[in-house]
Length: 475
Ligand code: ASP
Ligand code: MG
Image 1 (spheres, rainbow, N blue to C red):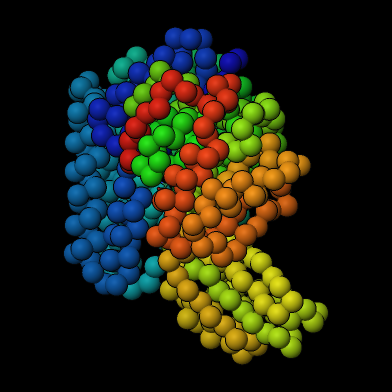
Image 2 (tube, rainbow, N blue to C red; image 1 turned 120 degrees about the horizontal axis):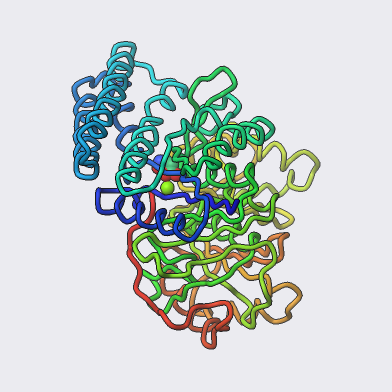
């Protein structure tokens, strides 16, 4: 068997034309003698709209919630009808769609009656996106000559009961995936399943967290020991910088898992960071590919990247951050102080991105969020606290900065006109990050790119197509 997991993001299945392209891509793999397993996201924007319907219902806006659902019903029906012409097949598919929306409407009415939306019910509501898209794909592919079989992802991806961000139970998945999928593949079938959705051991629907379809792809790929995991999106791959900001950005042809993970954490939208883990464990290469440009070789993510002449592979930026300065001359560096401080962030469920300390102060960066005033109020019981928004974190990643002298000097020289706040070189030694004003971020990226990608290594970067890429990000 030549197993390949093909994960398609929301934009790859956003409308009939996109789904038809996706079908042709999968048919191409089959023609090449590969055995695909298809994992699909909800159609673009559907997850957001389902969450909006859920929120409306929770506020008692039953009409609003049902109106969103009704628009989604039409969109899914129309998509199905545009793709599936066989009379029996489309009748069956429309029936499936209607049944799912009827069930969804029941739940929305219930929520609007009791005015309470639990994480568990939210997952049930939001799961409809992938449950529907996977059904439509199964029928649309079949009509295009791909011998598909729908598989309910919830029978394979079993998780704990942490609704909305459930953790997969690897042992069960390792067993279930081959059990359910291999017999189908042996019969020459292409299994099609939804990403993102899962169930707990009691069979209740859970989800892996936003963007979680990549995770499903990697879990399935890992459990089946697939030869590759393909992540199909709407960009040509990982870029040296955001091409909307930096028109000279180049496609990175090959990158290590570690580098890709750093970039993902720092906001490169191409890939969910957790995708990396199940694939890394099994040493399975992940390919990031563009369903609008399937001829492009994309970016190959592998465990050990080949040596690159330039120190960096990519520059990522995370905006909308806040910086919190905590000054506590007397208490700082007494034992237990940092843990008390972090307990405050924990209490507000606020993840911390970057930390830097001096003898008397600690600076932290967090995503700008509404609980900052409360966090500051809690912290001010132990120290003086200031916080400021509109910051950006610039993260430069590359395995080849390890042990190289003078890189930091080159970086800060390239942006000497910009005011740099916090600097960190993580323990991984492959990223250099620093905090600047959000308004300076785009210009800083362009200056850094000009300085470090002057003579890019052709083995690592695609010099041929200095392309403008679609500005749309996947989801
Ligand atoms: N549909 C889900 C989301 O939008 C999962 C995914 O697309 O990966 O978050
Ligand atoms: Mg997505």
